[in-house]
Image (cartoon, rainbow, N blue to C red; front, side, top):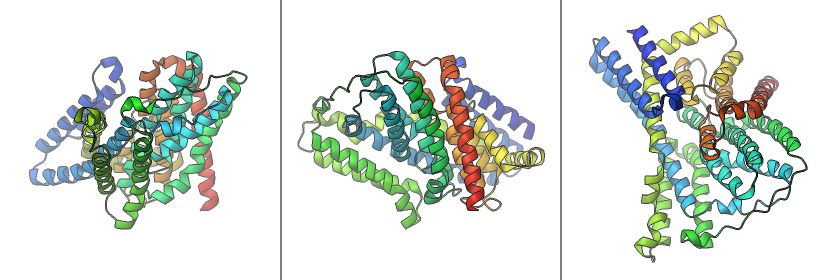
Length: 426
């Protein structure tokens, strides 16, 4: 049974990694992989009741992540429908490309920490299309935004899917991950910004065009209200978890209900055709359900390897061959440049137990940094990179020539900073 499960899982990985070449959506590959893995596992066991219980436990942990992501994505869609992000983008005014590099980098870094790296990438690249005419310059900014968004998402529990998984799984806590990974993530950002600002030195940029919020059917008050309320809800979720000890998905769904209520009250005097595109019902239809289905499939796939002790055996093998946790996690981060970091982190969570490595230990915090930022090395290595690739039609090999080397140096520099910081503080 075990060789069959490993072959199916590797085939699923390959199909996900070569999604664009095969022209098969990675969500389909993940679901088929999950179905085959659980089928083989179930028919090979003599105790179907035990398998059902294990599947139920895996489904419960998977559902928590999916509900959280669904709520967060819907909140972001509501804010975007009200042109709420113009609260930030309308304030970006500069005449120098090198100055804009620093501004865009820091905005992307901190915005990603509050929202998520995928949403931040979409918002900031859309902004760059309004600010910069030269395509080559925009591509540099797109590369920087990918690096900044991934770095920003690595140091908060809601900034990246992988840190959210670790947070919900109990491997990290909100305050500890923010304190432990912030400095390495910042180093990961500063190095590319410094180099790119030097490359683009002396070039000018036109001032941003003023946006017209009336086109969306919203007033300035409505735009500000939905932006700051949505932001407050996302920020308060970690505090809600700490205070109530309830899972984060409960906090995000609670906040989603508040945002829904406020939206209905604010727009209650409008005609249906005027407010239809602003409602939360419409936002639910715009969230990326394909990504949510992918997470379900890949997390359930990894769960079979956990229940069959395959991941535990892999962890023991790595410990025997490599021996050093810092090297093992660094290699996992490098692998995330090629393979999606979600299944890598899910597999790592199954490889190492909380009894052996408790919450906020070196392994989990370093994992959050490496998995979150390693995907920047290649354009296909993260959701943010894939989004940028689609929005700006970035050529894979252009990114390799112009950005990958810089992203790799930044990744290794941040990793060294985290290890040195951990040694000094512990």
